[in-house]
Image (cartoon, rainbow, N blue to C red; front, side, top):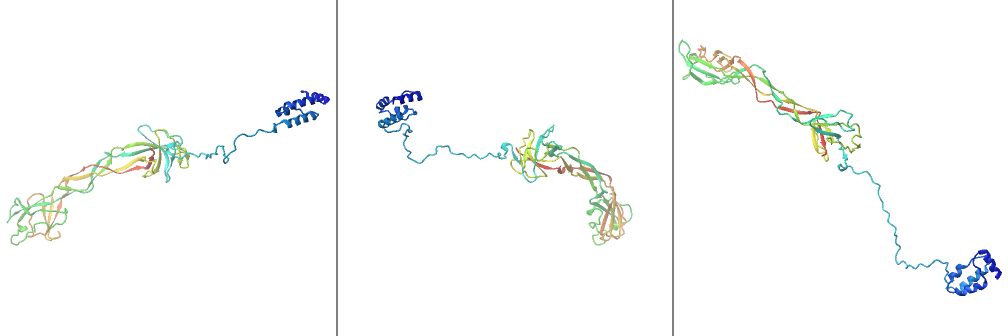
Length: 390
């Protein structure tokens, strides 16, 4: 046994283990099995190791010091709890909605087109990028047409005539001699001559009955009318150019993507003074928010001027009163000068049933305009409606 101990020492290079020391160790370590079990070194000879194991087995409390320690925590009293954080689903972010708040505008359907639009007073602004290929549209709105028209030259369009009633007077004359003064008004005192120059029957008829005065015994005087009538015209003419409430400019898109457009959604970002607007040909109702500020515009305005009032003036210088024995101005004609002078007509009949006044052409005829000429039928050339966002 002593020899074996020497061999163990040589092999392991540690403390020697012989039979006597093994016995002592066993006795002294009866309460500490861990010291004896951890101090052994398996050598070529297994006897000393086995002695130590045997001694350890008889004196230990029975627990294997090499076994894992017992879990001293209390047993779970409920169902298992998943302490991991729950998964959170995050949807992939899409494009933001098209609203004016983020500078996006939905262009209405129905022929509306996106346009930059600006109102200016003196210098027209340059069109923004994306709207420069075509020439800008110089526009006007709110034409002021007051005081644009005046009366033109007044011209007589046809022959003037003397119109109105013919006044008549008489004297009773028996026998020869010069005509009297014709100081008595006739019965009726006027022949209406209406219409002028036409056959009339509103005259004294005369006759031979009781109370009748025969035309054969009368001196007659006819006083011509003083009113000259005729057709004339005074054309209204434009004398000044119109002014406008606003002068504007709009611009035409270079292509479908101008103004940041993708389909009908656009993010124009026009710099001042241009506004974001939509345009459509003709007079239209604005399509609604945000395009609510309406501008009716065109490239110019056309209009006409009304004709002025017009009157013919002149001097009536006599004529002839033709008396007829029938009621149709056909038979038994007697002509009496209508010059305001008393005449012996040398009537061949006691009575007359109709008359016709034939006036001489008036002299000193002129045409005078009256009233004023007003603009009418105002129309904007190339008219269109532009509706802007505020």
